[in-house]
Image (cartoon, rainbow, N blue to C red):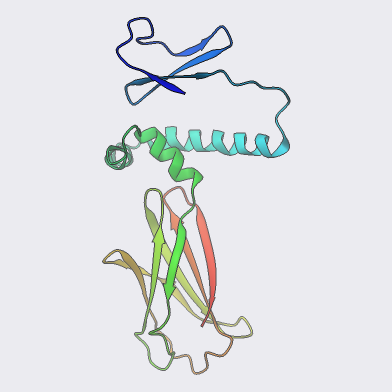
Length: 187
């Protein structure tokens, strides 16, 4: 790929030329590249990805109809050169939140009000984090929503848990397009 700068001949071009060269415009620049060669029919995995991308495009168009959401995507896009609000919305749809870390070191189960701290990252915005604690035989001990405090999600326990042997913390993170990520941690 090459970038075209101050070229009178290529100024404003986009599309394919003679099935050999492709001109694309991104962030005010003209990018010149070799035309893609499609030698075979799309595989099952490629077709599934194309369908997922079509759903992402539909989500992006719908999301940008909401003026407040469009403004939020635009503000985030400004932080990333060459990115549009539409690109941000598509990336947000395609990437689920990532649960980076769960700190259960302050959880003993002996008293209520103990904190479980969760770090979650996402392309755009995490809208919620839920923490569920189960005992060794998968019986629910407690569950609830974490609150966002100082860049982290904090869950405050509400039930005394006498024995932590074999217990699990199940953390679920959700983002704006309703992508969900779940991770289990042994306590």
